[in-house]
Image (cartoon, rainbow, N blue to C red; front, side, top):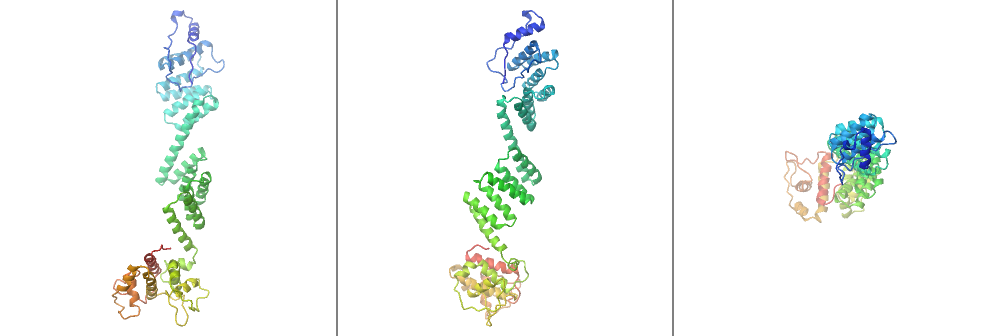
Length: 456
């Protein structure tokens, strides 16, 4: 992007303007095969804004600059400006000479003066971009370079500079956005991501990372919108679908979340994600259950219907394999929300149907009821688990309120021996005390663990 005028023409013009003899001709720069500043844009003289002699001084200044002598270049540019104070190409020349001396602030001032005279003068715009970049003003430098190319599309070398600056700017903004998110400055992170997206609207990872920030902010609709945009731009990236799944999960839309996770797993199998899917299926099943079931764990007492539902839902596979009695008759569970589980636990012999064919689904369950039902489940587990079988055989509990001859002694002993239930602090079992929801859930979870199956 440099230019050298014929030296003979320069000398002739300078001699003419000075009115001097040939032996007083100005010194010429030494011949140089390689310009010192090949990236500098020569401040060409547009039209007929100066006479040939001023143009010759300007050309000579440029030759000195490319020869590596910024001081000599400045003398010539300054001489041209003395003769024509509005000659903005030499003002730009002084800017480039200051750049050569690494005086970037002075360079920017010269370029600004040149642009004040001609706002679309491409060489000054390009030089101003160089000065601003050296001063650390990346965004302003990029704007100046872009304006230079718009003014003179032939400055093709600047296009690569512009692309590099855009990329660096985007990377810097992304890094800053990530740091802001890590520090909890979510609004700052969102602003930075929105700015990078405006500059690079086809980058899917930007939409995904913005969606994650918006999810943390609690703006789930916007988060979903941006996550889906990321997936639309890159349907081969599993993280896009994982993010969609996490947003749906936060909205308790478990079916849609499972679909999104399935898409992610299809693209890239993941044990962690598959485990998450299993857990989510259980949560989805739980969410679909009646309120009477969902409220068990927080309830101060549980009914026999709730206890039957706990066993029937969480130990479904075990109950299906148990010997079944199809002759069970129950007369008081029609219309009960827990009727299917009452029937399955009764047929498997887990919970008792009274001699008058009633189950009393709304009766409060006692610790003795839980111990009896849990001991029946342990017997089913023991059929395929020798360690549990040994625990049942060796169970010899000591309770302050139950003697070995009591009908519930064996049940209380085995549930304590296996860790399904615990006695009270004073060593009693308290068969008649109502079972709390927390106790019931903990006991069934332990049974699930002993059965070797995942709790739901």
